Image (cartoon, rainbow, N blue to C red; front, side, top):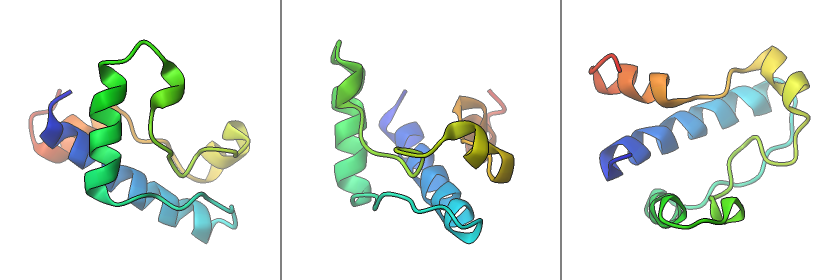
Length: 85
C-alpha cells in the first residue's frame, strides 16, 4: 500500500471507531495519523504481524462488533480514493 492509501485507511479506522463507540463498544485510542501511518508502513516491511498499529477493533470480539460496524478494508480505501480498486 502507498502512504496515501494507508492514510485513507487510518481515516476509515477512525470512522469505524466512532461507529463502534456509538454502538456501545469500548475501543482503544488511536495514535496520531503520522504515528499510525509510519507504524503501518514499517509493519508492511516487517515479517512480524504483531508490529501492526492498533485499530479500534483490537480487544473486541469481532463477530459482535461487526454486527454493528463493518471493518474497513482495501476495497474501502480504493473506493474512498476514487480508483474503484
